Length: 169
Image (tube, rainbow, N blue to C red; front, top):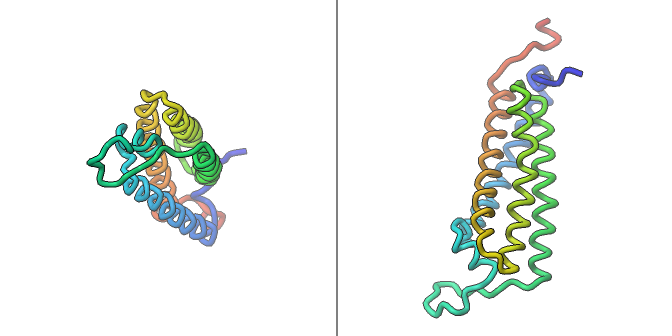
């Protein structure tokens, strides 16, 4: 089955539906990133402080306590499941774009490794393996870069690129 570029041949209604879905998905994703910024987990020290607490820092602007095991398991469980669905759905749309196969495979497969590295890494930081905070930061940045790249490609091909449709063949 030929699926490379299939997105370009879909009827306008389906393309519009997918474009709106990807836009709303992006609003949700970037709202999550705003939350990450609010928790100051955009630096290695912030990641460590967010999960291990800062009770010993008497000058801390916001007091944070080490998260409990139940809270950590809830965070990891919900994020791995929800991020997997986000990238599954976006990856399904990316599969239909017109792109080189190797590049497409990176866009659809890499986020799943980043999800495991990011949220598995957060668990290891919580367990005291502090160097993993750098892996968490890099994998989170990579996951976001892949998300942005995928969204831009999908929206460009849905909204601005014309393919051969049945009517034009």
